[in-house]
Image 1 (cartoon, rainbow, N blue to C red):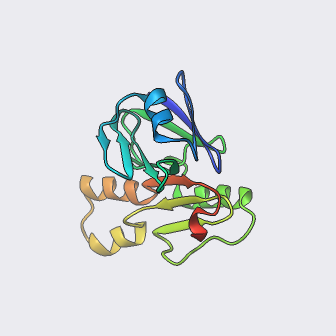
Image 2 (image 1 turned 90 degrees about the horizontal axis):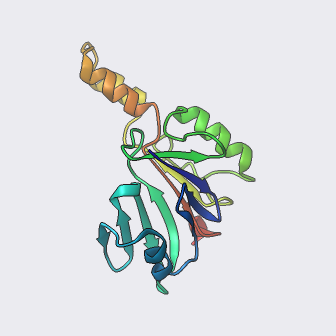
Image 3 (image 1 turned 180 degrees about the vertical axis):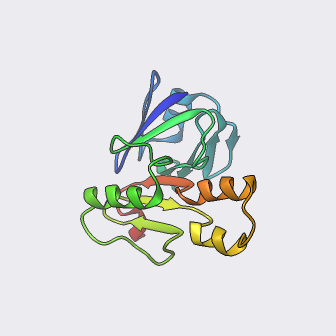
Length: 166
C-alpha cells in the first residue's frame, strides 16, 4: 500500500514519489504522477492513488480529494498522523477541530463537514442511525458491513486557502 500524507492548505506527500501541492499547475502533476486514469477539463483522477484533483480556470490544483474511504485498496492515508478512514467519524471530527481555528460548516451534518479555516472537507453517505432505521430487525453480514461503512467518513479533501469561502 502506498502511503500518502495529507497536509492541509499545502498538498499531499506520496511515499517514494514526492509532493503534489495545491496551486501547482496540472503539467507539474503529470510530471510527478504520470498520465492519469481520467483527465477531464477541470478534474483529473488517478485510480492507482485513489485521488481526484480539481483544477481552477488557470489549470492549477484547487482541491485534492481521496474518494475510496473507508476501505481504500491501494493507499494508506494519513492526516495529522492518523488514518482518517479508520479512526471513526467522531474521533476524526475531534482531531480536525483541534487543528482548526474556528467553527466548521455543519449545514449537512452528520454526513458532511467543511472546515473553512483549514479548507478540509469530509463526507459520508450514511451514518449508523440510518443503518439502524433501515435494517431494524435484520442483523446479518450486510448489516455489519454497512455499519462499518457508516462509522467512518468516505471521502476527505483539502483545498486552497479560502476554498470553502468561495
